[in-house]
Length: 224
Image 1 (cartoon, rainbow, N blue to C red):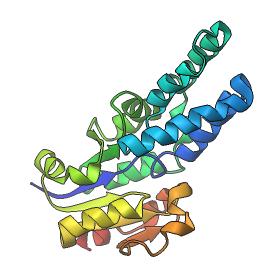
Image 2 (image 1 turned 135 degrees about the vertical axis):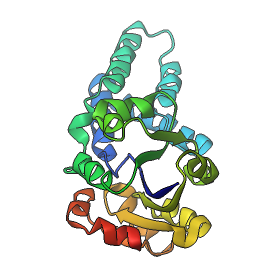
Image 3 (image 1 turned 90 degrees about the vertical axis):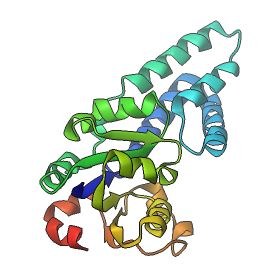
């Protein structure tokens, strides 16, 4: 039983996923022109079906749009290579790995993310995050529904959850109550979307960027 375990999201919390999506959009446009937007239709459809972002699954569906087109098939392979070999370490937010190192002085750091079982772990590995948290990585379809598993794998008296989605912070707070300290980094399109303002309970702590935690009194944070 640990005194505290730190649970960290990946996309737009430690990693600038909006920039990754922008780069992918540019790559698709360069190879397929206006037809590149068809990929994002599949992407959004899958997100609604699955509840998480599935980049590779959307590419599988996108391939069917070019059935029988040999030239397009070659270009699709380049998109696959682009995703798998993307330099994710270049998209870490400033200070992200330093924050993990600082938190690790007080308790285990654990990645708690939604996503698929291929591309999402690839992100964690190639960004350097996997090594930083010493392989403590949990990836679920709906992580807020897997808190019993989280508590069983990493038992603690208190948890600190750092996530760019107020919806997730609010859902976990309602289950764990005072056992949880919720930290909201206002990064990325979801965190800054005016439509989400006031929809959820106020996080315990709000910072403008993940690197702000380097100047924070972590012992005080853990104490609530």
